[in-house]
Length: 395
Image (cartoon, rainbow, N blue to C red; front, side, top):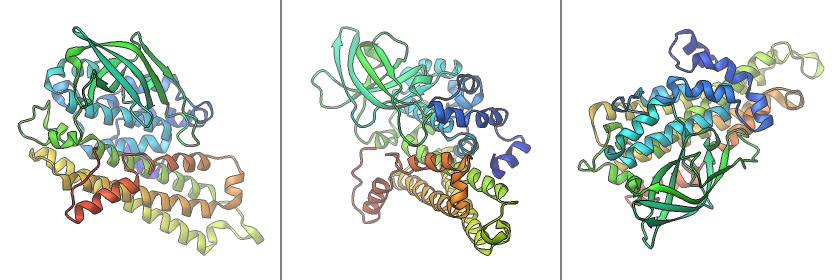
């Protein structure tokens, strides 16, 4: 457990606090088996963690953006794979609410009340076609990168309808006839993150649950005339997901630092010198701690700006959105620098001996590579914006 998480737990400020020990206890097994413990998933579903990003008029917690970041930081310090799946649910549900809108408020409220888990398999390789059939649509195709899909009750589906050129969106129950989930994630990082493939075979969904999925939907959400369930959903889910991803990276790096500091107290380096007495150890750990502190401050400041906007009822701008992305990109880089400094301290013996660092180090590698926060995508978009050029990314 990170020192930051321990402080928050002592103050009773974290909703996830009662679950952290159990989440951490299954982390190594989750990594080995590539699946989060079923009891942990059930416990999360039974907790208020599931309702953090649901607005109060949906029966949710309407949690401040910074509070979600702090919760995910603590969970990631215990098990990054578990945090990754929870992060996807919280981010995607925010997106569902913005896209489906007031016409589907009752359905979204029911999902919130039931503590039901949602996912959005729509990564590279996704290809789905829908065909109108009376008051239903038959959906067929493959969807990829469904983080948490095997744990969830609902999947979001982006597809082309009939001969239209603009995509459509709907949600369907994961257990519905015509849905098959393949637990395919086989990567070196976040190995229990359940980034699954989904296959739809003439899945039937109600036609009145299908909505347009226009490019740059975030711009549409900012239009005061666009009907919205709650003002918080005018904030783009990608910007928020990036901030929360930065929070998770901080949690992983902080936990790695805390364990490194504890683990070298009695270690002897070459020639009999205690590791805690070597000046370079002090330098590297000091730099790592400063990087993590700076990453956390960057995430929290951007979250605070977002929360102030939501509280004031201010409509976000493209500049606000890109600042969210840039803050996350920077926090992720700083967390990565800290991980490099920590592995330098641990040295060969630290990698040779069993422990959690290698798992945490591997888990971190996936975080800055997520398409939402990828430094190439974010820096290019922000750079164009700074030059007064239009941003070209659709999300």
